[in-house]
Length: 500
Image 1 (cartoon, rainbow, N blue to C red):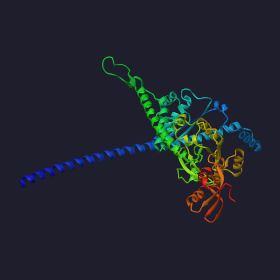
Image 2 (image 1 turned 30 degrees about the vertical axis):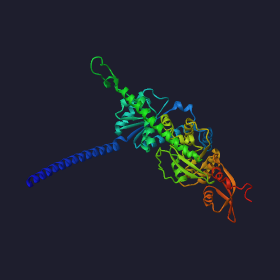
Image 3 (image 1 turned 90 degrees about the horizontal axis):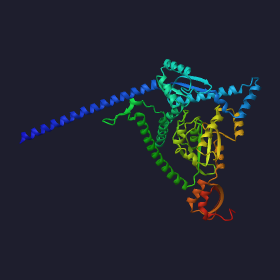
Image 4 (image 1 turned 60 degrees about the vertical axis):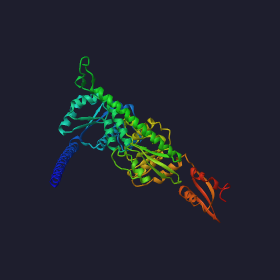
């Protein structure tokens, strides 16, 4: 019995040893596989950082379109003309305006490319009467782009214009690298900065809607051929398959966004049960909205000079000088020629703008394209059908502009100069918001409270301005100015004839 028991124990030890060896081998294989995957990922990241981010920029201005639109106001044009005459120079207002606008457009596109993580190898500039139907820039300029890409070893070409599907195919057929137009570049920046699930869904929806008309199949070479008698033929091409998959994905994303909208609607209904008005910050990208949002609410959201650095909406409570409380909303920035698919897909995010009682239009006072940026923001607000809402104009970055020019701008446009970075002008802005609010108006009331009602006294001191206080025995007489929603809660303690 003893020998049999010993042999069984030895067999069990051997089987356990074999199992341990198999586990060790399996673990080592898994670790080796993970190490290999990590090495491949690191290699891909290094490759993307060294090659894929090196870009050639193509900026095109169509002079035929300049006559159809005015990019500065008539007052600014006359001011520049007068300045030129006083300086003894000839009037080249049209040429200087065109140069200024074009240089600002070029600088903005270069900043967009940097915000997307691109390293600019070269910038190619062209002025032509009208776009070329096949390549946008013409064959001669396309040959120059090919030579610049070859000399710089760039792996990306960025166009500061939207390319039609045929133009994109024609250009990519000539270039040995990837080609991206303006809309796709903005979509890529949005994809980088979308953090929440809602933002990621909205970006994916916009990207798929952009890619759908630009799918390029490869004809019969990509056909899904059938097998057997009667099934031979071209079948369903890969292009049709891709379109079907994208349409199915679009339907799925729209269903998910609908559920997000329902959740937002429920949250909004709960908020509206307590009358707290919403005030929304809007403006051109990189105008300093996030910095102003932090200066007013101490929210600590990301502040960056990169375009579209903050994408997901933020809501914070803010108390005004009258002790009224509002919800301040920080929204995504706008930009010239913002892709329509973004405006459509981000409608759930921009619902806060639609629900806001007041819009704070933040403008970069130091930008030479301030008027053009203002027009572009108003154009997007018109698309959202919120142009009729009360708007407070804010000239941010006032510390970067001479005081005389700021005074002229603020008087001319009834705008409030502020510096979110230095914290100046914020009191005037809060007072303007307080005066513009219509919901939950400020009223005056007199109260006679027992001193035992400490909770009511604390509520009035926290949410209203107490102008006069008087004690008589166990009673407290108060004269208060504050929100109607707060003071009407304590109707039973109001003095009918007022305070003394």
